[in-house]
Length: 452
Image (cartoon, rainbow, N blue to C red; front, side, top):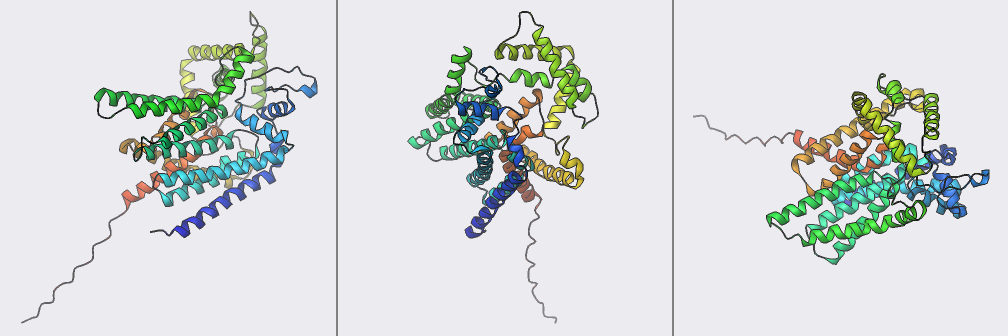
């Protein structure tokens, strides 16, 4: 049996490692915190200056136009930091803290799953994950979404394990409501969590209806828990929903970004220059820029003209659907390409990996080991059907299905890192138990026979 003191020391070392690695990345790549790849910083600065949720450059004379193109949670966090003049330094500190908390909640979830040593291993995996480390120094949602996943999984596992012992307590209702709040925040960070919610809600609802139909168990508690969960989610997302109703006169629950993301991976240029090319081919920046300009030209030529963000989003959805219908075989090939990209062992078009092949081989070996264990863990859980692990399976399935259709690369997998780490540890530990040979039995003492 492992001593508690050893486990505590190991946890502290892993947390220090997580913080140290992330702080190193922030220091070495501090200039990247000021790069605004997804316009989160522009929105945050406008919020802090009182211009509202917009990416327009008011200081450059641009007209201020409200937007719902990006999810609101991350830019709102950045806005709070810019409001208190913390700047990129505050963003870097926030990213480091979120990374360490992700490691902490991964460990806590592992403990809830009765894996005291495995929880430490999973925490170490999250602490050293190359994608999370790399994006610690970017003002993007990878780090925040991974943290929200770790917190959401902890809440769900806590709820599922507590239900087995005390399902009817007031404490359980508060736990479920809080889980809903966290889930709502996750949706406001990345809309893909909405697909996870849909799968989870559907399975719980079907299970409740099935039990009521068979009259095997009382279902009043299950209905109450679904109600509390829904209430928490609605409270979390309602400010964004109300804002969009007031500003855009439309109940925009997610963003106006989905049409572009679907079209980005389903158009003739992408099919020709990437899908039909050898594995590893990436869309060149020059070609992508030309395609984006042609897209704007087509939008301007549309009759009646497309003006609002909602209209642009719907127009792009329709264009993507038309492309899919026109070339169904290439669409299937692109889906397989996106599936492979999402679960790839090594990032494509990485300057660091191309310049230092040894690092590339290390990253590839790292992910091969982790993802192989996670696959084994998923297969074992499908076979064994352990209720406390169900959220992990539905989370993996929902994100994978969404990114089969929408634009995908390895960083889109970042929110799944805590789940992948725990599944991998589970898979490898169960495989080790299966392959473990029985200890040889003690040889019996042979009775000595006196020769006559």
